Length: 201
Image 1 (cartoon, rainbow, N blue to C red):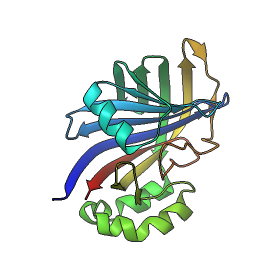
Image 2: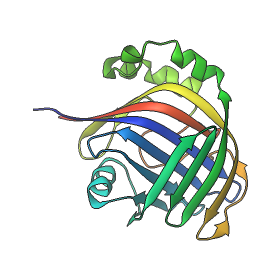
Image 3: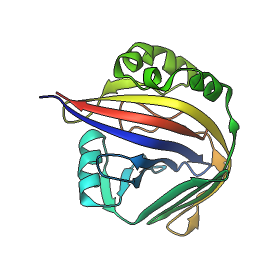
C-alpha cells in the first residue's frame, strides 16, 4: 500500500554574503503536528539539518541528504512582514516584501489543482524555467517521490543572520544552489506558501 505524507506551511530560502545558505520549513499542518526545521549549507558545502525532535529528524534525514543532523529547539515564524528564526546556532531576523509577479501568477491557479501531484509532475520543467534550480517533482531518498505545490511567493528584502553568535553577512542570492535533494529554492531569497507531498510506494 502506498504511503503518503502531506506537509502544509511555508518554506523560506536565505543566502548570505559569507556563503551560508538556509532553507527554513515552517509547517502548520503535518503528520508530526506543527513544527519548524532548518536545513543549512555552510560555505564549505557541509550540509546540516537542525530538527526539533528525533521523529522529525529521522523522516527528513531519510528524505534528503545531510552530512550532520542536530536536535535543537527550532522556533520559526512569519508575522506582519517579519520572518524570525531561532534554531540552535542559527538566528535570523528578516523582512519580507510584497508578493512577487510569480506569486501573483501562482495564486491564480486553483489551490486543489496547484497542489495535485499529477499537475506538479507535469509542470516541473516549467517551474525550473520560472525559478532556476526549483522543481515541483522529483525522486527523494528511501524510494520516495516528492511534490512541491507552491501557491504564493514573497521576496525577502533584508535579513540579519548569525551563526554560532557571529555575523554571517548580509542578505545575498542563494548561490551555489543548495544540494539537500533534487530541488533547490529560488536564487533570490524568498518565502513560499507550499504544500509538500511525499509518497513512498
